[in-house]
Length: 109
Image (cartoon, rainbow, N blue to C red; front, side, top):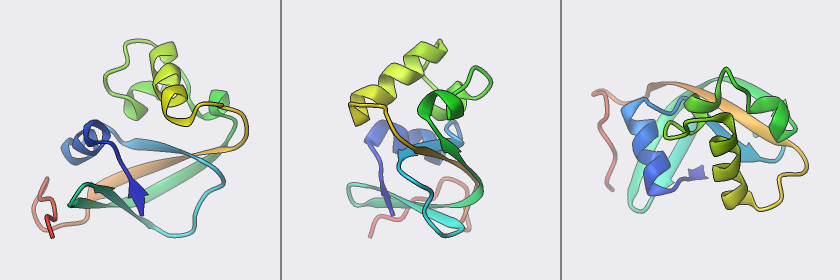
């Protein structure tokens, strides 16, 4: 389970955010459950990529990580505000289609 800020949760639910970056080594599993308040969202993990943040956050993918970012530096700054130090290993979880019967249906229980 991943806790998500409201903004990031909405991006994921709308399909705007297709890569979720987390600090640490990759976790086992093929399904990511995102939680924001009482709402949860289940997405299929289609790929995982690990390394330093500057290796996994690139010009070709930064908008899939932070849809509001206009430049790569904006996405880097956004993640730095969340994690503080950006040393060490990060994992990018590439997520696919929603795992619910209706697109954008969000569990509220």
